[in-house]
Image (cartoon, rainbow, N blue to C red; front, side):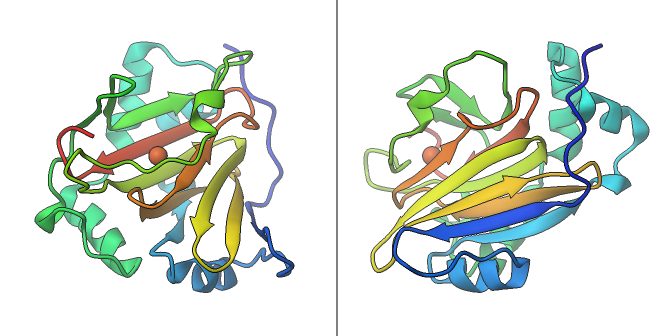
Length: 209
Ligand SMILES: [Fe+2]
């Protein structure tokens, strides 16, 4: 099995602003800064996961069965998703959360989706500011779990502070949950992510968007 190179021992966050505001690296400070846009982050204690899951997270590639095993281990329940959305200061886009399994009709990709970054694959299609919303304008609630890897970036266009960019790094012991309102312009970028990076995305609300 190929394993990804071990990442830095600490888990790192870095929030950059396109205006002249100084970058932030502290979780609480970052959460205060992104709260006004309905976004929030939480650490995931990966140490609590069983050994078999750890082993899979360290592998660069997974078979479909292994991928399903990782996905199913980390998938969040409706109750937990609603709790996270509430903690982020939002109301779910669809009362009660809406559909937990949804379809991105433009790209024909269904969610939840575990992205595993492959070496040499072109992920630039994600690198455009976009909104995820159904035809009637109902937005998507996006809940991401970064489970392994380095180099994921989340960009949010804000009405008052330009673009804010969050760089997220995992360690063997810590991953990250990130939620934001998919109905506002954003990018979840994989182009700088190390091969083997694993990102579990739950996009809930309208069945089709
Ligand atoms: Fe999106």
